[in-house]
Length: 132
Image (cartoon, rainbow, N blue to C red):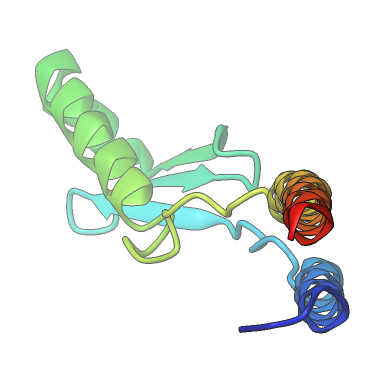
């Protein structure tokens, strides 16, 4: 069983490791994504903010009619959205600062409770010894 000072040392090391990870992890940067349709005659670019930053149309595509244009624009936008992030990168980044704060709070509470329990045991042992 760990003594109180050994436990405090391990907790301090865990906190330091969490703080270090928090400093070294950087959020992934978004990059532009381009989707094409109608054999490249329609190109839609999504900016780093995830919004459409450009729509490039070959003038020949306008001759195909409104329905064709609408359908191909939809395909180009969806292609750009599909290419925006790979599925693994789409996972949210955990809030390491919040995790660190929670771990520190829980560790402080645990140590305080351990001291209270230790004091209660010592007090009980002292009373038992006095009765003997």
